[in-house]
Length: 191
Image (cartoon, rainbow, N blue to C red; front, side, top):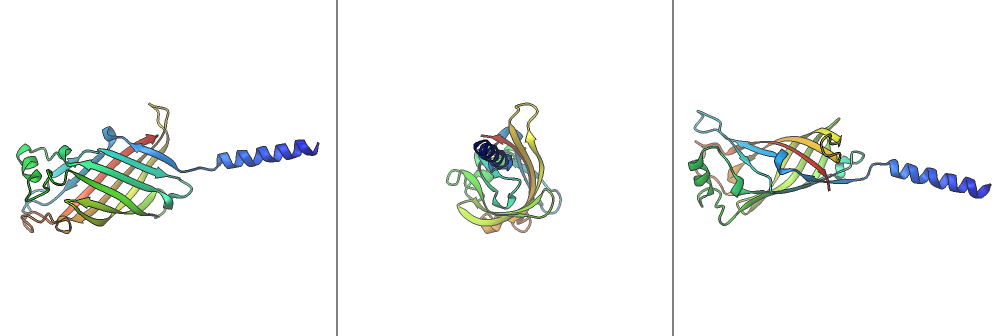
């Protein structure tokens, strides 16, 4: 009888441990990720461009969101301003110099929960061979089983700003704004 009680107790502990959430590693989906950035053009317009996702990984545990990490690589070959001549110009050495610096990377260094489904993510952004901290305000859109794949999935939106001159890309400032506004949406599925 005592052995049966010990077995039952062990089963309860195992079930309780399994019920606790653990960090899940999500592979971000390039087909459902958009990294948009915009700037002021002489005060007349605010063009928007997009960087495509090369690779991205998000590790997230809803019970311990402060331990989350995110790491992404954005190939500059996928830069799209919707103006081919501008895409070409931005690739040149006086702007992004994509032959020398072919990608942008972001790696989180700190995640601060700010209340229900809101977070402040601080990370190292590398552009044009220069790494600087950039803060993103993020919102968890949804976490759960994806209705199409059946896999555990997650989705976030994030916004932020940066100064391009901090990364050595200052051509035409202040007429073309130094401040760049970021809007990001992404989703990923468990690896």
